Length: 113
Length: 113
Image: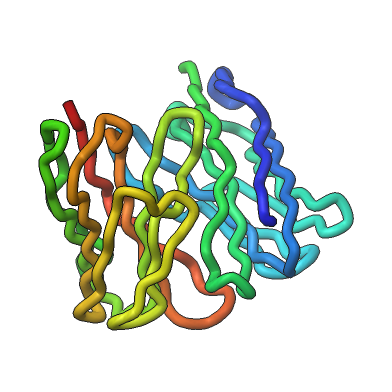
């Protein structure tokens, strides 16, 4: 079956630090990959996505590249801000399974001023 | 465009009581989903629908029922609530097509005593 593994958290960084959040996946088909963000007390918002190998998704300074050879979709940002404090979820969608999303467990990021 | 809305935002139930959570979307999306979010477990799919009048089981369907009588609405029912159903429930919708994004509602926080 499909699965998503995220690095263990929580993560605490100082403002302007570099961020990497690791995500690897297992899929039987050829999935699309997503990063969703959940700010405190809110629902999930799409942060970025990639639908095929070597695609790079980007938004709000965050980037992630779909690496089929390493089955990874790591999230990076060069300089985090306090406003980036949130929970980040990696997910995959398998078009062959009615595009149901399979989520990682999420990781909490806290950014200190 | 309201996107995906959920009613109610918060509810407290006693064990054995029943209730219905309502999800509505105004994007004319074919697919709709119900997830639950529990600490350390990410989001897990309860039930989903690929069109009006159709429903299917997800990963954790026991204790829940759903109905999709109108394209824009997806109802999640708890016939006899249990403390194990204390969770945050999210609805999502997406357009037809293999690689479309799911859009999430703000969530319903349910506490079963």
